[in-house]
Image (tube, rainbow, N blue to C red; front, side, top):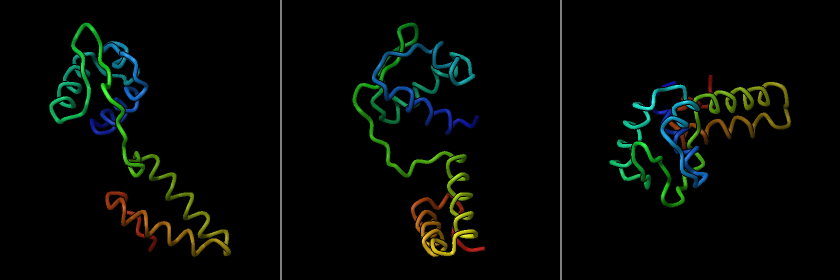
Length: 117
């Protein structure tokens, strides 16, 4: 799991508003508690509203709204595959699928989806 994916997953876990220990988070993400400590320190330093400390646990102090365009690589791949399938198999919706691929590529340039091949 990449660091970016792990940080995204950490934020998603913390959005429940509960206190989470580093050991719990480490177990869920398959890393060491030391990695969680470093990740939490980095997230706090960048301005995310996380608080806590080693031995007590971590919590998201205030609700954090992430833009709905924050997709994981797997989600992007699934979206791409689904839209390309619709484009190839459903003539009535092919144009809409191609248009969506183009819009997604505009919103998420990292997705490398441009609707053209």
